[in-house]
Length: 120
Image 1 (cartoon, rainbow, N blue to C red):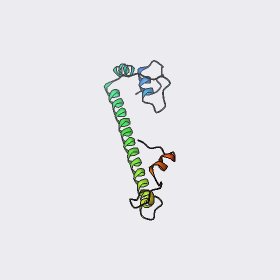
Image 2: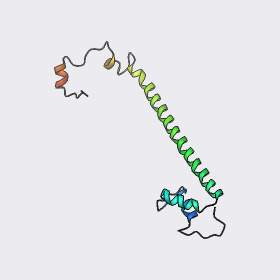
Image 3: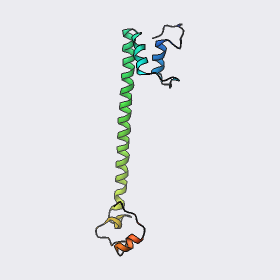
Image 4: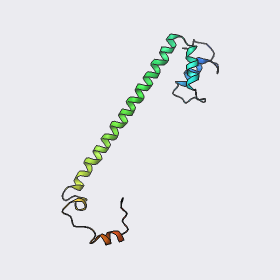
């Protein structure tokens, strides 16, 4: 984009575009209007380069988001599968959830007096 030896000026449109797509956060936030104005000063080839770079960045973001979602789904599945033995007969939580288990409280009144808060 820049010619070798060409000075970089703060008000140079190409410098602004480079800053906008730099992996380092720019000191000044560049607005869409400023980017579009700067694009008008570039050649068609330079604009295509910007479009290709922006498209690549978007693809990478989409792929990273999909990867995070897949990782989260795998983690949730693994956690659920790890908990299954606790709910099976002989498991630590089986008696709490089994239809055959005895009630923990003798009466509803005892349950209410125990300070247990419900969602109802």
